[in-house]
Image (tube, rainbow, N blue to C red; front, side):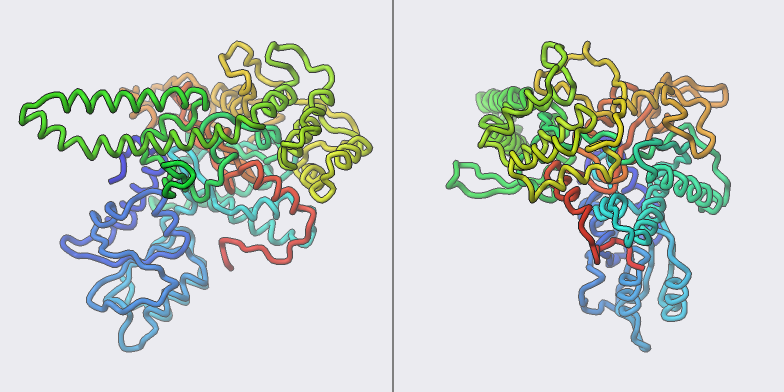
Length: 595
């Protein structure tokens, strides 16, 4: 079974909403149902529940709506699908027979608003077979307890490509993103004040205005038929170009490092237990693994110290239990054996993961990290200002052990550090490093509003002084988004830089102060339930280090829970590939919402 609700944040909120609005809505004592899902809802349910959770709710089997299925006419079916032509047509095929449909009856639940054209199509075709037809407004994925994604990586191309032919697609993507963001707010039961970062581009303003308009419409026509006023929460919308440094820097916290250096696909880590010739195993890196949750945001050095300690603790506990020969002690040990095995398996997985990271880190990445940190911060580990950024960069470019991706990342950090370079200097760098074929990975950053070869010199944003904070020498950089989160909670965001699309909550602050109308909060969980929320949305992807910031800021500011989301999750290599594609025409790009 899944962990208790309070342990999984957003995942738990989404599961509870699905349980209440879908499963409880059509539940009948002693009656089993078949559940039919499409691609989106399969992924949605997989992100927030297990098959055992569905069995407990009276679901006997889960089917794919796109596949041919045998009729089960003595059973009712629960359809949980997206309101798209593809899914609706598959549903209609199940009940196309004039004599009888594939199932006894249908309960239909759409993730989002169903267009009138599709609704009328259903109504005219098989209304007699339908017992329920509702929209539940969950059109996003809860990736982690405080992280969500809209799962539209194509948005990056449409929002930042200079290709004028994609304007209509960009408008459609913007509309879809706005609708999905509103379902995030609705799921959290919030009507937040919407603000946006005024620079470097205009995408954030356009999206913020769309979201504000759709929030207003949603809370006028929600299921309670009451207009919901603005809550004490904020939604910040930001363009990806606001912090290019955090996207290309090598991160040494466990999760960010693993996803950057290792081939982890769909959160699945593959490893071998007994050396290179051993049997290959797989492990899912997920929040059901409490050890993963505990160590994922820690520095690799801390992780490498902690896991062996934990293994020793388990081993000594087991030995102590085995040393007792009484019948009751042996019985207790037998009961605990699966628990010991499970714990040790987790330790082995994460120890392998940490060692794989270090095997990549030690030969080349370690040297790179010092250069990257010096360029990113403009100061060395002793706090001395870097006087010549090119001198810092050159050893990386001359090192034959670094691949082109790592050299491009270092060149980008050099350019970001001096806020743009000349065309002549850029051409020399590209030619000397022999990366002509990949030069667009550098040049195309200008489409994100990042100065690469600027017409005039621009000032760099001032950073919060964190020199007093304890850090590792190779992890001195703090993502810009952490400054933004802290300033938003402390009500220190400049209104010119962060305009409001509506009247933002007047009482927004991080003190946890309550007005006379509010009940005093009794404990931390209750405080989280009723306190302010900060939702940060980045157009064009977020990094694992930025995800970590949401947890760190929430931990430090107990009166406010921070959620971070984006169109998709970034890794540095994938981002550079996407940046390269921006200058290329894209005739046909798949889009998750078909018309």
